[in-house]
Length: 387
Image (cartoon, rainbow, N blue to C red; front, side, top):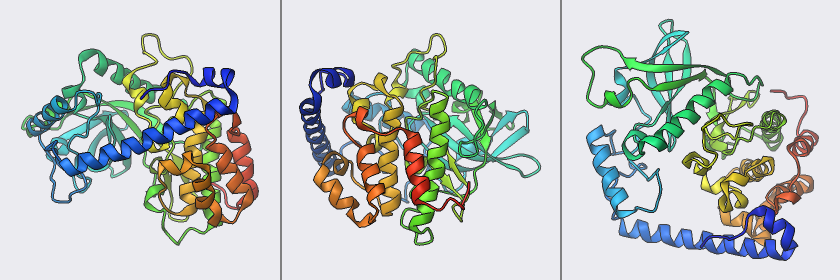
């Protein structure tokens, strides 16, 4: 079921009634998606490795290719990025053991996988003097399941992330240092390394701490400290919006916070919407669909090209609710106002509750600016704690 009107057409032709109808459609689609996922789990017919099973080990390129082909043959409509086997984050898989990143800082040796997304893998890499960096490398599955044109577009966006990211300077935005490339460490490299050799990599400052998703339920962070963490995230988002940059993947997973919550970094600029796209880079590439579903604003699902600053506000509103509640919240909650009221009631802060509700308004025009959100968080938190 696809909505036939764009957000602009909705706002100009139907007012609140049309928006309510669109909201009902979204809720219905979400329930259909949940039911579809349930049936898929029951069938378990894809034959893919379960990424949540600790018994699953890393896989070589042959296994990766075989499972991808099997999955794509059974699910041809699921697009470029199916659920393929994941690398384990403990230790370094064979495919990366003999790869180094060549940079202006010197060669960097990969020592740990920090995270993995649909299009890239983020690793910890160390220089010869032991200094640690975060390095992002395109996922090897892309070279298998993407055709030449699609891969070229994704690579262009990846390089664009590095080149434009270097020009950003804000204490709450990840510090991109440079673009490098990968190479073999020795001639006797292990099977599967060819997937990584000669690839561009984005070298970033290593942010010390954990992602917000890892500390959601921690009692160490009081409500006041959580509000200040969110205020610092808002400050980083505000910096991006001032420069006409839209993050498009704001979520607790992409926020790194130090042990005391004083240092807060918004990471992953890989799907940002930058001003004045480079010539030849299609604004509707597959990467535009990589915004995480749970945090995706309704209008982005209708038409990814309509993503703007108010779309980031929706994602940040969902993030705020989860951080302050200290738990994950299902997407349906934000599409059904009575359920949202019940979920947020325990926050016991009327100003914050009203802010979150306005941030996840189905109509983008009703959402506040990030400047207003930052002001509310500053007023509600402890301004003495800085980032």
